[in-house]
Length: 486
Ligand SMILES: [Zn+2]
Image 1 (cartoon, protein in one colour):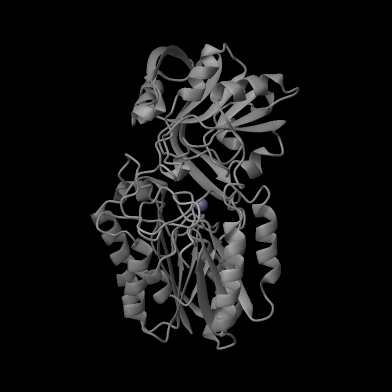
Image 2 (cartoon, rainbow, N blue to C red):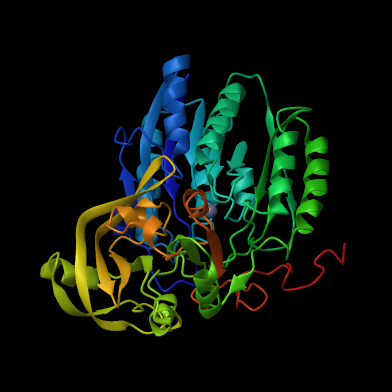
């Protein structure tokens, strides 16, 4: 038995001003065959899980390329085609295979390709043939398309947001894929379109209970897997929206009925799932009134993990206006400022302009005399088991606030995003992180309190008024009842 695996992933915010090139993949994560590290990355869990099972079970595993770009705008056509064809050529060379198990994202859009995953899966199917099992793990912040379903046998999405279960779901995917290849099960996929788009952190109710319920239904009564595909609200594609995907062991009727039932339950979560968003001023005021430290303030919509630049200065400016000193911020993406600080060196003072370079919604650049307190080449932070690059980075003291500037865009995942750059996070009154919810698992244990801030329109977060051009069907909140004509 021979199985091929590869990974190609990007989350494309089609409204973002940041085009994604091949260099963005090389900067974020690129592992040619055999070079994938022992630890999984967010979208390459299946490769690591397959290695373990190949050792145990004794099948032949052929590894293709694994590549991931930090979320950004639309992917450059040549970059997508180059990486896609690299993987297809690797597969072509080792045919026949009994299975192709992929690590994907599900919200990748390239110039000329609204549905990169559908395109890739279709080409994999053409090569591998109808008899091969084709399966993939995906991120729930994605848009599940007809083309993806038609060209796959088994798709499993992470259940948790933050995605703390990405490796657990990879192991489930691999286990079910092997069972299917061995003829022990026959996966059949059923989908319900929830006709809505919203954000669903699973760290809070009501989504927490809903996801627990999905988990409790898996593994019995012929239900192999249930995915709640949240949808990706910054990806303007025809099939944007939330879906429920039920995979049964050869029972389409049961799958359809269960998907519809759960899909209507998911629809009832709309408008109730997100935390309260404060203004920067409100959040800082509240934070200063909390006893103990640190208080975490999440800059929810300037989150590079959603494809925006991550260089907004709005919260930092508010901190400075309010005279707050005991604070730190991770991170502001500004490669030019990093270069200048590195040239000046650790301990140097310089006149620096930084931040807010990519779009007008991100505030104004900051002009200050800063002290370069730390210089770190190839800085990293951790996200669960994986190591996330920040690129060359510096920590500067700006009016008493410790600000980390970085060169490889990334949201703040780990507390070590601060500590690796010389900030002592436990000793700061306020920690500002650019992240929607992925920071939560790492910061919850040290945070006295967490406040979520809406600092503006860097990210198209209000689907009711976002100018979608490709989305055609009616979904909530653009219409109140998208099911009324059924
Ligand atoms: Zn996600």
